[in-house]
Length: 451
Image (cartoon, rainbow, N blue to C red; front, side, top):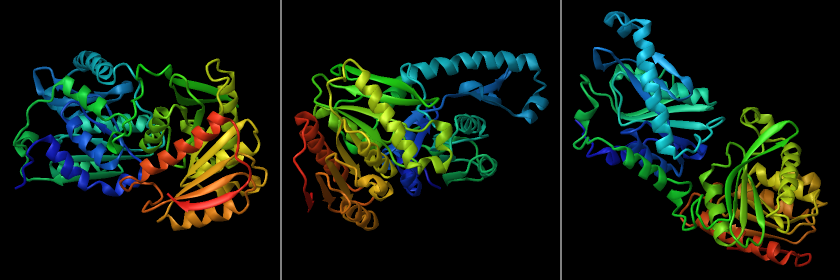
């Protein structure tokens, strides 16, 4: 019989079973309150963004511990018809219980997120984490919330649960991961040496500690830092599409960098947010942006429509030039994977772009436009990303602009290896500061070296 020391121990053990999901750049959501300490460890191990999904059990009026269903954010409600029938609970009693718990859901959501909206789940792999499940009512409601928000794939991960509940959850989730499925099963708390209640302030503390890129030990100031002249969510409408982004503008910025993320990622990517924090620390403004709406991102063809993505990037650059506090700033593009191709394509058609950096990019997808590119371009590639490295070399041969290939030793495509993303961020920062601050290129040339 296995017993977890506490929720942290359970999270560490659970994370060991979830390593195969790391490459999907998942979002981890914990179920408050007890599920959040477990989810924190999972998110840290996977370098993933952490959020919560607030759900509440609907208890039978005369026996509150007996769940007759559960509710979640955005009006989700799941009922257990068998319990309702056997307990003879009427529609009025269900409505009264739901109204009461709905107020608590809204209160907790505001408290935990400090008034911020839920991190968008559309098109993402979402890992729903709790400290254990018994009947599974709240877990099922959380899965329904994730589905309602457009999650591409939903995974339920719990340290302990009865087999029958796991079997039921497997019909709802795309994947269920657990450590223990004991028979007989009495209570989740029996499997913990320390099952003390998790207070609200602990949930808030963990969510703050798990700010984007916390697993990468970023030393730059977090979003919302009072020293930023401007730090806010923005929305730009172009071609009828409403595109969401986050603009961070440190005082006395020397330039602004627009991020174009790769396929399967978003502006909430911990990797891109880590790089953005490093650029902010170097005196650069950043605009993390989704070039596709959540609905558009569900269509794989849009993700590889480089011309469409480039058009969106140019629209974002035009928006920046109209902002009073950005008018005099040089604009650069930072692209990853397919986003790098979009950045190069857009820069080839826009002489106002002063610098481009590609991290693990696919410049080959912009090959038709590389001959027109006059923007200083840095191609950062991992030494172990051999196929993409060769594609970058072929693309570099087509460039006549100032450009350089920087090879980061030991790095694979996602720069997950210790220190490799820090190296990429440093290289990008130096490139952008040089070209955006000086607002000039260094003339044609080509170099290739290891970082």
